[in-house]
Length: 235
Image (tube, rainbow, N blue to C red; front, top):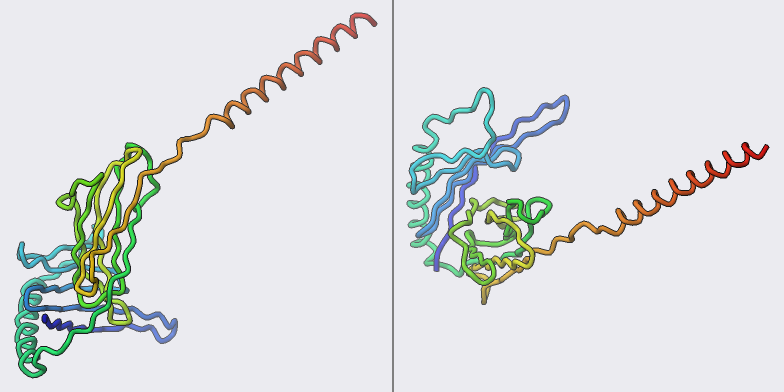
């Protein structure tokens, strides 16, 4: 049974006159096979470490004067060394106790309003699970398209569970069926969610009725004008 160690470092900035509070979170986590390091500000990710590419992945949008984090990746590596050491100590001390398990609650939805033929993004959201991470697979019309997707870092909730997102770029075509399948050790079987492309085409009825109504109205005006002119000629 895997053990998970998560370390949080919190810092708060508070203006006592306005009672405005900002919270920064540093998350460093590891298991026997996985690891993560990220920084958050007011529940928004600033960056995380990519240990495969050995560098930081910035998540904030570009600014005129971007923020630099010198030494942040090296710091994340040192945090992992500490986490692994403490994990080994915990395994020895607690003799691998049964792990608490919370199954993820999953949903699938488009990021934007869907338009046929216009590129968009599908989101598979897993929330309130423990321990991290989850594994997510995608299909389009029964064909595996997981390679085109991305998987976010896992994010902490206030109840010590986690969230994780997977994003799949797609171009909606009428009748396409997409699925995301979530795997987690707390699930006895994988949980599959389905989303179908079902975009209503604009109805021509209102336009036709408006056109007919306008034509009838103009015909009535023309007829009234004709009889008014004839009446004046008779007088």
